[in-house]
Image (cartoon, rainbow, N blue to C red; front, side, top):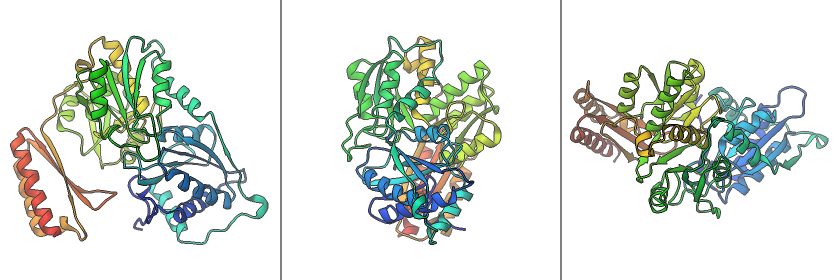
Length: 446
């Protein structure tokens, strides 16, 4: 069965345009609420959101849908995605909902669903909900309509949980940390967590107004964090995205440390401590070849999945891994969270920094990445990757890179874009390969 609404990370799109309309949001509440009514107990759903203006609209529509089918609703207000996952499980909810389009601009929004175990829904559950979206689901009797209430201390509960992931024998005293919250969901919780552990915190991206989320700040626009680290003389910078499930780190020199370096640091530290499970870590096909070579040298395995943190997590659960993530900054540490959590991962990085006693530029640089280039080709329609000329150019490129690099070509799961990535030991070869493939795709898509 093909997907009509759900993409690689829930339902996402431009607000007040299909599928992100209040009408569909209400239907999602009715469909998901119906699907997760199991047993005779009073059913409950928890809802969090980031700071987008449209969050109010989507939230109210979802509340109407859930209560209409008899589910009680607990609303948290602005809170990170991993907090929704955590609290869905700890509050014995039947379902958790996060209203966010993650790192996208404010005019987009999305709906992410979590099961009662705190994990993102399986493909099977999403397809069953999709089927219900196209049906008239039975409404609750008047006396059984759900109730809605707000919980004001959700942020405090999450801060407490996050801090418990930090080693009990360490403190952040003496560290000056820039925290860029992308004017998003973590604008209160992340600076508070670091401050409570003893750090001097310089907070930026903490004045959300509904339209400035991810706007020139956060993990996808780290220049603000870089400049603030250098100008303030900070020891390190932490840049989160709009819903705080990913991070990018900045060293004291203002240099960016991506998800591959962060995974290398955490996995190697866990391995030395004897706490790394599964024999290695799980990353995606986009992670740098340099990471793979570094891990091999450390005797640590690397398993690759399709792009998307849900696929990383699925493999982690299947293979018993406790470290996984993406180059883009999604970090999943299953000892502490059931989904990506930028703040939890940042605390592991800070623990390594404290223990090393060295500058961040030395501690966080685990390997030299091989030259890697990623370009996007937007297309209006059709299937350009099935074009014979495109396939021939790709085959030639794969033959050229054989043994010295990798080629990854894939359609985006959220927009009409073909992503072309190559990496190898020779930068000129990598650039030439990507440009040839992009030109062929553009011609086929014209």
